[in-house]
Length: 123
Image: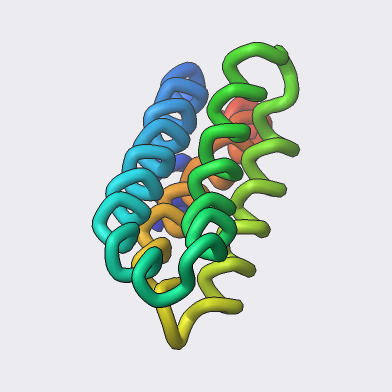
């Protein structure tokens, strides 16, 4: 769906949409971590920092790097999407499914960030 949307949009609006999707991914990861924090802390104790912190940290790093380093958006977003999808699959039977919206948003952001050149060349 993100690829179809990227082909329908004007090429100059794709970086803005990718930015919005990256920020939305961070917010989704923060909400999921906030909702799961009491239950995971009671069950896992100190390991809750790793279980909930990885998706939040990856999402935050994606936003920070792409905001501060010009030209790093595509690679950073794809790496973040890969890590988030892997984390969701790794913890899928437990709490991982709560981070699926964040992973999907990051995947959509990576498609938007990558399709910029293709759309500009085809238009």
